[in-house]
Image (tube, rainbow, N blue to C red; front, side, top):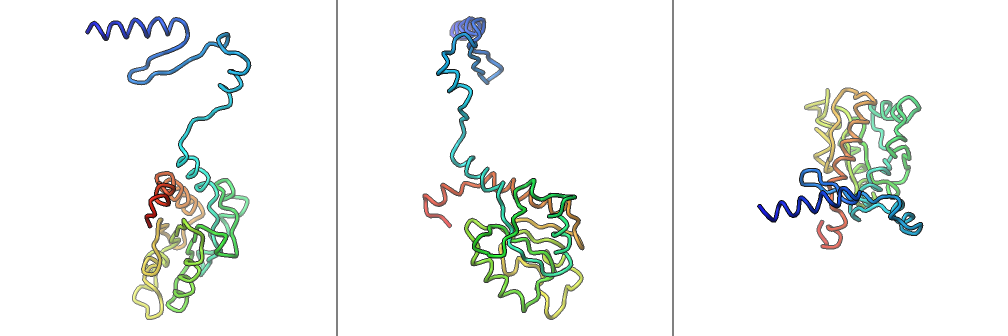
Length: 201
């Protein structure tokens, strides 16, 4: 009890000088302007403290480049999402690349036939790591109206690892934007640098 009172009085003295303010379990440091030299002020105003993993994930989440993979009618909604009304460039995903080697996001928009499946897998294998897949529309998610058809794959997850599903027939541009935001939230939680250091897959 005595130790707690001493710490509290010490904090109150520092707080009265404008140095330390305690809020519950958190401690906010406040440095008065007159206590800083010009060199210290330049450092104080221009340093951001973060982790390397957070900075790395921030860069990846805001520069998802999709590969152009429009297979059917959902591709029209994907094109509409790129246009000025919805402006996918706000999320850093406006650069639809014709080459899979420049892409890290595959948006499978449309019906995947069994004839197209090996081509889709080959394009996915050529994409840059780490790579992600969004299944857009009912056909890409589960076969859609073609369930039980002899020539349609019942969901792209039978040939590719899907990260985010965007249901709908077809889904509106707002739904695709929500899917991309869900993908960004998933990227924020990843620890890719640690995986590469350990050699994990």
